[in-house]
Image 1 (cartoon, helix red, strand yellow):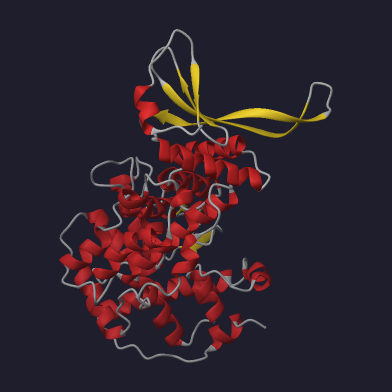
Image 2: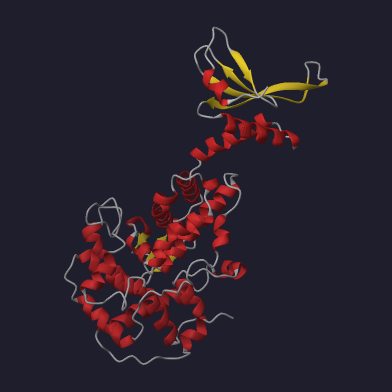
Length: 422
């Protein structure tokens, strides 16, 4: 006989547990303590102790009364019977669901992002790249960090990055979305999420406009910049860093993280370890006499520490990444005119326009990665003699620009013919 709500309301505890039966295996177990537990009795195929096939009776917990009322209990029973009709054991399915929930509580987006970044660190990515990915994780931490990664829907990710797009920071929006995709691919590879939902968001953000680092590319204006740098009134180490940025045209992060142990001023070379390079390959920089002079001045100020350009707050850390750009602003150059990274574009443009040096030597000096892997391996040690001569020529050229000397470009001269690849 089917149960009624009146039966349930009138049920009282007894000295021993007893059942109030409903239909299709559903019953309410009333405990002496007063607790009332919904249960469902069912049978599935199994084996006895001897291994013979037999029908095995099992019970499934469906919740407690009155939290789960009669109607809800029957709906849960019907859902379990539907699983049985599909050949599935509802108890096993419930156990899997509970396990998935427990894993989801542990495998939040924030936890998986942290694991992904730690793998990046073990893989040898540059510390600057690691810090940038940690920053991206912080940007979406409030909206996605505590969510189980397997439950995150595409619209949630889009909601997390859309504010950056609304603020007209398309680059930030796109790069944050790329990071979220990296985390999801890590989750998929480790069986923590079924798929990468960022795949469904391609084209959802506004088309990214390429952003180039502002740079001075005109020789006359470059001379004006160099003369302005001579008048810099800030900390001497910042001035030396500015001047070396122009002479050596390495990436800003490579310069500010330079260590004295990497500098050989007798051999006139600076070996930048692979771990600090974007290409993950050691880069050797020839030092012209002007660079050596500046480094020796810097050594008088920071030679007892680790870094050539230490932080003003602590010698245990390198110079801030904003120091060079800040110095350029103090000199009156806006972010639309010149940046720390712009010294590389200035060198690349003027060296190529001089016509004196092979493009391969210039690309090697810039530590640009060759997209052709075979060619990159062949050219790794090439052009050193040309690069040494080019480094000194470039430093001399900057001196001529600084004093305002007239510069006449020379095309395809003897030096270029001597070092051009055959």
